[in-house]
Image (cartoon, rainbow, N blue to C red; front, side, top):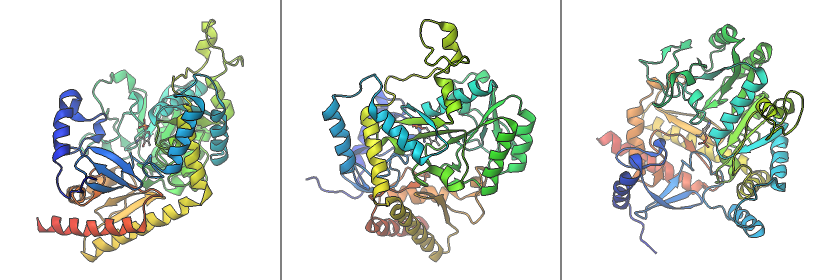
Length: 454
Ligand code: PMP
């Protein structure tokens, strides 16, 4: 077998040059790029990634959190292959039994969801969630929180990552569109709220209550900045009172902060939940669920005619449009069901959470021993490393963290066998061992010494 090299990134560098010719920026999602060039991987096994230069890394990216069982978990591979062997290549294009099985499982774990529809990504789940809310309330505006990401939909590609000079007042953030190519009238209906500031949020929501269809949020921003308890309970009360649909985007937090998502941790039931990532066991997926009355908007018109599709265009227009060639893909659902079964079976989430806690406290102790102001924040199996002592309760609080230092550490770690896209947050899997944690802490100490030397 190939020898594991320690420092060379030559093959990645070459591949990136190749990629840049045929793929804009050399990457298939803008976020995958980082300086000087992204690392090209060729294999994943358990907690490890192996790059095209044959260097092995402990992976804390895990495909942006999707791989809670690590890479190529044997039982998940088996479930996916069995599904393929049993039923043919891919998909029937018809309803099938696994769709019901998964829906029942999700409803059991997320009692706020009484009915489920599937999509192929988190982004598509959010698209449907918003459309359902607008149809249900017959109002047209959406409120989102500054710094919260909900996929690449025009309407919510607003104030995800605004700079201090464009973001406006903390209590009334200025909406900032995050992409070119979005006509301004597509974001005109988007209102931006300050996370974890209930008073300011209430003022804005009351002002716009007659136009607001929904408030959408990540209950734990980016998977690492938790909503304050009073804030999220207050928000629930407020949206109920004002007739605004509350959407929890649990694409990242679902299964990762608890099997039942952040909503089970807080004890708050949103009207609509969007799921993705972990749910697909490593395959592309999304799901939307909510109260039956609300979800039925996607299948029945005002007169209660179910499946009013085709032919009668008046009926069709009464119904929320939802489609997708690959929705409810059997292999995806088989892998997802096996993932959930694994997590439930051995109480593996508890082990995962205690491993995550262990890594966090080891890292905090390490940096403290060097008198460097650093802390970790997060929930369940996700956390972030922040070089500051100030409290972090929203997006703007991150502005005063020492990101240059963090980035320097992250760049060093890439040469020491710890993989994370620089400045991203850490996700852990059930495949990460205590030995991985030891190696990670050791790598941090070497990285830290290297950075301090320079
Ligand atoms: N919402 C949240 C909170 C996410 O973290 C993501 C993905 N990072 C999405 C939505 C979009 O999901 P996808 O990438 O599957 O479209």
